[in-house]
Amino acid sequence: MCASTGLTGPKPVVAAIIRDQAGRVLVARRPEGKAGAGLWEFPGGKVGPGESQGEALAREMREELGITVGASTILPHYRAAAAPGIDLAFWRVDAYDGVPRGCEGQEIQWCLPERLPALPFLPADRPILARLRLPSLYLISDVDTLGEALFEERLARIAARDPILLQLREPWPLSRLRPYAEHLRALLAPHGGRCVVNGDPEALAGCADGIHLPGAWLARLPARPAGPLVGASCHNAEELGRAAAIGCDFAVLSPVKRTTSHPDALPLGWARFQELAAGVLMPVYALGGMTLADRACAETHLAQGVALRSGVFGKDLEPRSS
Image (cartoon, rainbow, N blue to C red):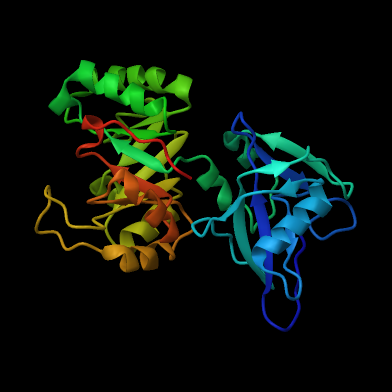
């Protein structure tokens, strides 16, 4: 991926997110003689004069990796850190022909998303790493309504068909919450799903795959709690900024639409959600009145995906069309 510092304004650059059947992501190491030599990046390059982004993506993949791009999709919610002279757009390569190889002498590597942060990446690409570790579907538990057996049956069915992150949010004592979180973690792990627990980060330290901070805890914590994943509940720009400042891995922003559970809460709407999400590079899920069908719309408004609870465990999850 080639950077430019021309004086005629930022140069449009495209970068590709390519996954294999095991969920690994293709990354490339910049060779000696190029700016940022030795650092890792997502393959891509500058958009040439008269080219569309899609055309540039196809050309760069052919030149850099020796593959022919079939279907591809722009990822507006994948946003890079500011870099001088670059306007960087990320595209997902949905289909291609050929076997990727380093046609320009660059080292390439297939990496699981959770291992990417250990690599020295170009600063502009680094914010994308958190998004690659997270699915588009963030479910919130409904155990007390359904009972454990029915909840787990429906959760397993959903997890088998769609990657998920689950928040265990039940008003239980720690003596029940901690072991059940570990139980759900074991249930989700074979499907690549993960479980975080809502509540006191000190009492829940080391529990399951991480912690989800309620607003009260977000306001009082001086730093990010330890753990693989830390999320936070937010309702405005100040709370989003705080979650980003202490190093949360993701946030949930609500309510986007009017909800029956909080009928008096003024909904943000998609335009305001996008404005707030644009203020942070941290992944943000849309919550409040969401359905499974809202995922595509959420991503076009810079959301990582949707967070939802009401009704989802009472319905069969349709396969995602994208």
